[in-house]
Image (spheres, rainbow, N blue to C red):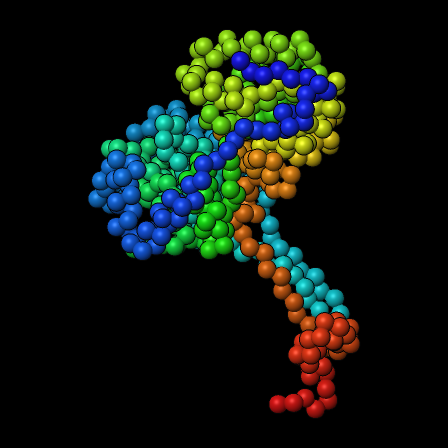
Length: 427
């Protein structure tokens, strides 16, 4: 049964804590990374057989395999993928940066935006292959103009990649696809092997081994983020539908036993009805065992005095997903400071954003929405400043620049300025 807490009567640590303690797997991940760096493809074949239970002849998915997968997919679902991809492109196009240029008095200043040359995307396999993650991670990279986008995803025991994942990769625009999963895939993309090229940036979701591998290769390559278990926080008033709220909480809980599902409401009646509805809906949920474990461990209903207090709680928790199921939800938008993605109104469940609406579903977790953002086109570009001064412009600035250099006791810096302004410069 989900916990029901009254905010004013409950210790803060019970309101704001999440029972998630990651096992220390850093040593095991470091061993995998070291092995891939040392043995390359041979390590990937061995680790794939060990962890995925299949002996592969080739690491790369052929063009024929991708075409066959797309052709085998239900045409109706293929249409769903294409429409979702269209929505994601339409949204992310607005994030494309073009740089800028300023010219004045012999000075040119600007910012040059350049796509990252080689990008790697990781997509998990498992019991619920995430075709949506293929679209969400590759489409922004494609819009950024990245020349080379590779994807790694684990094979099934038949040695094949899930057809929906391959079809999504084709729609999104992946250049090459490899049948490699786990920490070994992250290592291969970071350091390269005989078959898999090293990339400069890695994106994509995954559980503890993927997160730890990304943490360990960060600095060698860029990573999108290091995410923890997924979260939803729903702010609801008395007008919310209890069945809808319960369904949205369970949609998060079914992801993972460690997922957090939280309702914050100013209505005791709604709180009670949602708790009952959760129990009723759990009985018919296919992933009931996972969802129930998640609800019992990290599920909460918090009762507040008013919606403003609920928003204060949300801002402190900084959830990955924040639903605002109240009358006139737009009036509260400016008060929300910390959330990965905000779902406004009673007809905007989180699942809409997970798959279809257009904004990215790769979001900051664990309170990191206080200082970080969702995956976007920006993750796949670099911004370089550029400066041009004429001789006259340099002479105008020389005294000020040299003064800075002398103040910092960097004579060489000062000399690099003054030598250009002398009538008889040294050779």
